[in-house]
Image: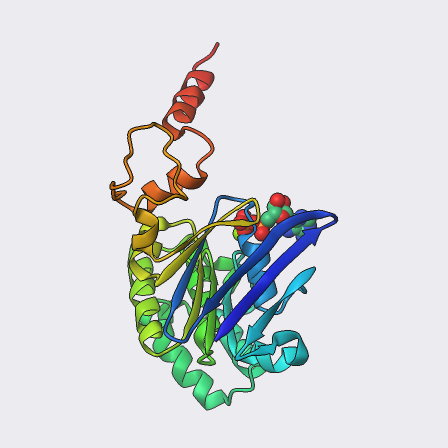
Length: 269
Ligand SMILES: Nc1ncnc2c1ncn2[C@@H]1O[C@H](COP(=O)(O)OP(=O)(O)O)[C@@H](O)[C@H]1O
Ligand SMILES: [Mg+2]
């Protein structure tokens, strides 16, 4: 089990993540949501062991990950938000590099890479330099690289950015399949309709603070956490989607009004 206990991370004196706690058991997918700048990627960097928290702990099976960070990192597969890949390597060379760094044999790397490159329609491009890849192609290589060593804990930070419809669909089914394998999955995203389908529970973050948590159904149900903006909701209302629930909780602007203002601003002489 992965446990995050009272996690706080300050940049200078400003908390980017403020007293966040949660647990993910094997076979669970935690959806971690929030507007831009709410502290999602900061949390990700701490639970992948890339950054130390200012306060609080991350425990894996009851042990602080800082005690043996190298061993912990072997258990983790991570798809970062930014596709920073070596542009001069080919996709296949990059996967071989990652596999070797993970201590895998060349034959196992070759077998797994071959299958996953086929599934993600990257096989014809495997020898091309990453510099020539589109954003979606880089994202697919990152996904393969994160999974190639069969990690126990899988952390996705906005994994769908740049993915085409087919790859996104494969990704969605992949998350469910990994869940059935008993993986611990942390899924950070703002694509709410996917989160709604794949996550066993959800945390909503706003300015670093955990403002709601529960199952998707819990969050859609009108609860004390949801203060109606328009006065029309009654406590029995079931919000139609996670997106509606999210808007009620953290949306700080009226999206329709903002769009109208932009159109009228660009129309000005
Ligand atoms: N390295 C950094 N130094 C200073 N401030 C940072 C740094 N990284 C992120 N922040 C700030 O922390 C807050 C949370 O950022 P981040 O975790 O990237 O949010 P999210 O992933 O939800 O968009 C933002 O206000 C951001 O500007
Ligand atoms: Mg982010």
